[in-house]
Image (cartoon, rainbow, N blue to C red; front, top):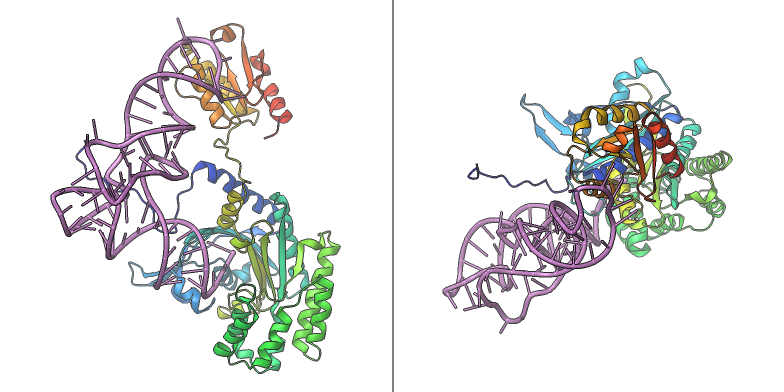
Length: 446
RNA sequence: GUGGCUGUAGCUCAGUUGGUUAGAGCACCAGAUUGUGGAUCUGGGGGUCGCCGGUUCAAGUCCGGUCAGCCACCCCA
């Protein structure tokens, strides 16, 4: 029995186990996202983890192809594990839009895989909570996307967050004007680093990778470096894109979106026009979003997305523009943990039932059933250990109420209800227990 | 993928120029208190010093490799 060959238990780099203390808040995040998405009429969908490799390659850019987990399956097919949820959604929509019709509003909460180097809040396996609107170019969809992000972070009770928005058309318009349109990916990528490496280095990179002249780089940077209130930035953008049709359209959309969002009741401070936000993925065409936590901007965007009007054309002749965003569940959770906003509750059931009088097993089980029938979760301790030890366990695991019943209580058809936070206990008739517990839980919400 | 830092008990960490049987706090288990937790005291269990190899009479300590974590680049949720 002791001479078996033991295998070291371990997990792959970037892949993690999830213990109850993190899985409980994780599920809460998922449930909250689900609730908010549904409240806007988004319907759940799911797609396979594996796709034909050709579906996944070349849609997000060179870099994403490098990070893709791919292999040959047992049938000799080249397959890849989904890298995000947007590309599979585009395939899904192309395949099923005939049946589902448009506009198609869907949410998708699932795991994705990227074979890149790990860091805090960056894993090789992580969960995204996407919601998307397909089949409409209307600005309403862009507006709603911001509203959903806003409602989501409000529902998550996150006090400080900022949704940064931009529109790629603004910059692309300028690049058309310079005949640099085909280099827009390289330009945007360089621009995205503005906050980190500064204007001089960005200009140098633009020259090197996109062949932009110093004057052109300067004009682009001038646009990206704008700061001030949303209105000031919009006014400045307006001047910079004067005479450029596409750029003007982009600025107009930004303005229209912002005013609609404010009209819908969003505090304008939550939404900031940020001309340097461009997103690294190649498929975005218009509006783009990134959401940062004010207290932990360094961890990066926790909810990003944008408009991708051409993505589905790779799979279908039908026009299928889309817009959506993705909550980075695992990154957000890592951030909340670091900010001390994750409560260390280790039990999903609020009530603890001590096993005390061995001869009354059936009575304990009946009592537990009655409490559960009232919609309250109960954990029954499996062993008739010393009461003190059981209460200690209940305390450590974060139960709110302990139910204690021994020989004396059973003899009188009663039980003791103990509020574990205050230490106060009351004795009630067995029949009243579920109701009284409900009141106790209501009186001291977790 | 590249570079830097780190890796000793479940957790946070000590460990002297290499030198007996590797320690502490917290956590865990038992008891003091045979029906009442979060306090105190006493006792107890738990360590292939990440892993593999090398140098040495001797390696937790030095060297190489490897795996993992963190940081930067890159990119991104």
